[in-house]
Image 1 (spheres, rainbow, N blue to C red):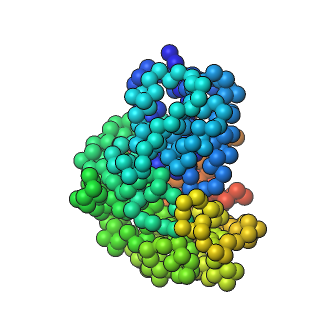
Image 2 (cartoon, rainbow, N blue to C red):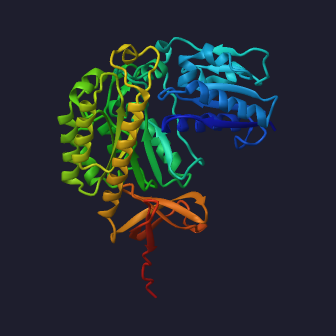
Image 3 (cartoon, rainbow, N blue to C red):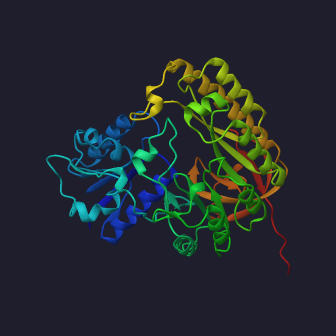
Length: 438
């Protein structure tokens, strides 16, 4: 039996697709092994959102061939679509597959025989119109379920539309069917993922339904305890969606809402589809009906033209917002984007300093959010990860807890009392034992 190993760079969407491709290999008689084990085939799923995609890809290829010098190496993902010729020059790479080709590995590559020269299988991104159902399973306690792909937005810093194509979605019927299949595997939490999931509903080029319609149907799926929305644009997060989540049986009070900048001048340069006032309104709307909700924020610092004063406006805006944590990114130039041609580039030193400031703010925000829930009782879903005798889990509103490892608690919902915040910023707990009636 041939062996295959995978390495995934980037987002939850990539993880869902890697897992799906992994099942294709097992269905074709391959044994899936860990990346550090000797394999006959290595598939590397790449990302292009942040910088150094080339260096990361080269390093992973080098590591694969160190474990198994004669292995077949295939590269897929966003970087493969954007820079196929560049990847083909990396020593040891046998095949590069673009957005339309990555799910056709067996059709295009046959027996995965080692090549003298890398073969490129890519087509124009305009041809990436097919939708491929994807979800992760057995990789983590939670499952990432892809419901949408591609993006019709044109943010000046982003390569995703060039790497994944136009917005397209799966049908509600297919997604519900897949969710039921996942429930049958004893998965208790599904994270809905995509490139722009708030834009869900475009099927075969025509808008036929909406994200609100989707989550209403998913809320009826038995066997799944929690649905979590991975990320949703503020202009697409409607009052109706917020209201539904607040009364939902299964959708948890956790929203991750990209902001990118708290300065209207920079938002305009980024070609974002809202102003900061709208963002503040969305946060206020969530907290009005779900005071305990967790709200995460994406921010980019050091964008071209962002002066010290502009950054301070963003910092103060975030400092005053009732949010729970930040994901902070230093701006990095991406080829073939409008932002890469803009004036006013910030030195790396400024980008690094601003990133540090916001990460420090994020730690303060997270700790304050956690402190609000100390002494409360909560249901925690525990992960399979074990670290130095400890295990971790999350409340429905994304408070991360830690306790002594117990294999019987893996993938189980347990009622616990949130006690204290430890030196690592995690919440320590004690079990709440239910009374047994004799």
